[in-house]
Image 1 (cartoon, rainbow, N blue to C red):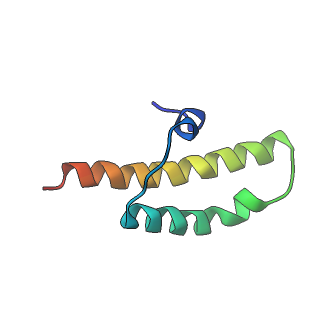
Image 2 (image 1 turned 90 degrees about the horizontal axis):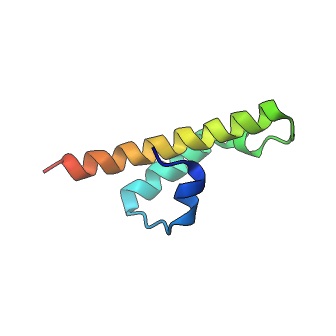
Length: 68
């Protein structure tokens, strides 16, 4: 499984639907991502929020590849 760091190293090209899911997912997770705090718990919550966003976008990409 690719980590967030590995994903960040490669260029990202999103189609319109992927971009929409990405933006909607970010909007849902925005409170967690933008919350201040450097404690380990806060960092873990942010990492998990970004992972949920990546999972949603990746699920869309996977569906698009398998749909005729």
